Length: 411
Ligand SMILES: Nc1ncnc2c1ncn2[C@@H]1O[C@H](COP(=O)(O)OP(=O)(O)O)[C@@H](O)[C@H]1O
Ligand SMILES: [Mg+2]
Image 1: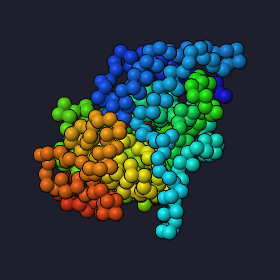
Image 2: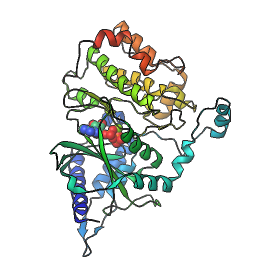
Image 3: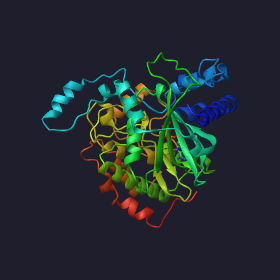
Image 4: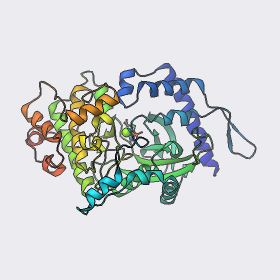
C-alpha cells in the first residue's frame, strides 16, 4: 500500500477518534436517532461502543498499522441504522412467487440469493473501481455518518473543488450486491436532479478488524461525489427556526425529485429509499437525489430494503414490486416535510409493519390545501397499478399550481 494511502487511513482513524470523543458528549436525542432509523438498542450499542473502545493505532516497523483495541468503527457501523433488512427472517417463498410470475414473463431476480454471494460481489466491486489514490484529494473532514458509511468533505487537488466522499466498510455491509448496485447506479446516472458521482475507489483497511468473524477482509469503498453545502432536506428543515417548509417549497421539491425519479425509472433502476435525508440541496438550491445504497438495478425487485416508515405496502406484503414504491416513499416524504416525521412514527417496527399492511394510506396532515391532499392521496394509493408514475405526477395540478414560480430552493 502506498505511503499516501496510509496517511489517509491515519487521517480517517484520527477523524474517527475525534468523532468518538465529540459524539459521546453531545448525543442526539433518542427521537432524532429513531427518526434516522436507529432503534433504542442500536443507539445504545453505538454510544456504548464509542465510549468503551477507543481507537489506538501505532505504526509497526514494516509501516503497516496495528490495532490495540477492538474496533469501534466496525461496531458502530454494524448498528445498521437506516437500512431495514429482513434478510435473515425472510418469510416469503421466493420459488412460489417466481412460478406465479413466470407466466407473465417478468424478469424476476432472486435478490435474496444474490445477496448471499458475498465473494462474487466483493470481486465484482474490486474489479469495477480504482485503488484509492489519495493524491487526488486533501483536507478531509467528516461531515456526517450514515447507516453503512461516513461522509467526508474534501478538496480536489487538481481543480480545488470541494467534494464529498462516502466511505463504506464492506465487511460491515451485509448486502454486497446492494453496495455493488450503488456503484453501478452512480456510474450510470447523469441528471441535474441526481447527485453527481465522479469516481469510485477501494482500499484495504488495516486499521480495524471485523467483529463478525466475517470471511471478508476489511475493504473500504469510497465514492467521490459533488458536495452539497446545506446538506439534506432533513438538515435544511431542522436548521430552520420554523421547522417547516411551505407548500410551495414542498411542491417544488416533489417536482424536482419526480424529474430525477422519472429518469432513474426510465433507466430500469428503483431507488427504494426516498426520504428527506436522502434528498440533498446543492449550493445553488438544486434538488438532488442521493444515496443509491438501497437501489435495485432491476425494474422488478423482491427485497425488503429501504427504511420501514417510508416503505410501500407491496414491499411489506412480500410481493414482487416495481418503481411505484418510490412514488409511495415520495408521498411519505412530503408528509415528513410537513410534520417533521413520517406517519406511524415512533411506533415499533412490528406495529408499523402491521399498520402499513392493513391500513394502507396513512392519515394525512391537517391544514393542507386540497391540491396537496389530492397529490398525497395519489402518491399513497395502495394499489401500485393505480398509483401514478413519476411522469404522470409531473403534470399534477398541485405541482403546476404551487411550484410554477420557484426556480430553485431558497434556504
Ligand atoms: N454529497 C454530499 N454532500 C453533503 N452532504 C452529504 C452528501 N452525501 C451525503 N451527505 C450527508 O450525509 C448523510 C448520509 O449520506 P447517505 O449517502 O444517505 O449515507 P447512508 O447510505 O449511510 O444513509 C446525508 O443524509 C447527508 O446529510
Ligand atoms: Mg441515506
